[in-house]
Image (cartoon, rainbow, N blue to C red; front, side, top):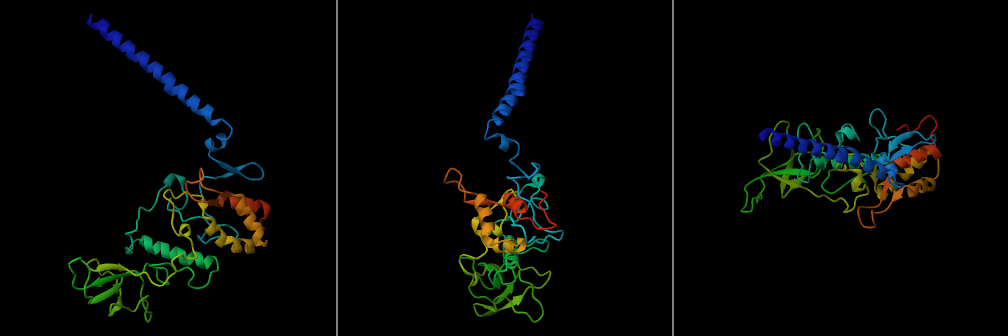
Length: 300
């Protein structure tokens, strides 16, 4: 009697296994595959691939790419995307962000702070786009592209802040012989250069806003990476900043470049989600197809 019940139990379990194997192991994958063949969904299911003039897939519209030379310098004939923290750049196998937040404002010996990364990138973009000296300046950044941060020492008040500074040190900006700090003094105290190996964590960390414009010429997406590190899109403002450089490198009028940008400009999803954006990979591919640069081409 006991063995008969055991057999019935095992037979019921085997039948359940067979049923769920057919339903979930065969039926569900087939259903998903059939849905993916619906017009309008098929391209996305295949990875949103972008093809060249010969119909060969060369990129995905969902993943950005680096348009730089072997030394990492931006190629002038191409639009540049956002910075990428995924591997060596736009590596889908290493997708991720730096995990640095707004509190990352003091440089470490082995890694610059997020603030310094943003400041340095802003200066580099301004130089690449041929903007006037100082146009890459941002609030809380030095002219040299470092986080404008001071360590302030002295007696602290009830709220924990230094009430009367006795010593002030610039903790991020390197100090060359004979050079001046980004600010000479703070509340009547001369600003010192940081000394290598000295610990300033006991001081109150004070970021200095400076005189930079509230809305910098270099847009925010030009100096910050996306959460995945794979974002292929940039803002229309960053795209417009690059138009003159790309047009000059390709020897065409700027309006022809803008026409390509308009063709690959997307609005907000459902009219209210996200922001208006331009797909850098698609724009660069079309520029190479319509206005190629001799001896150079986009190969994905």
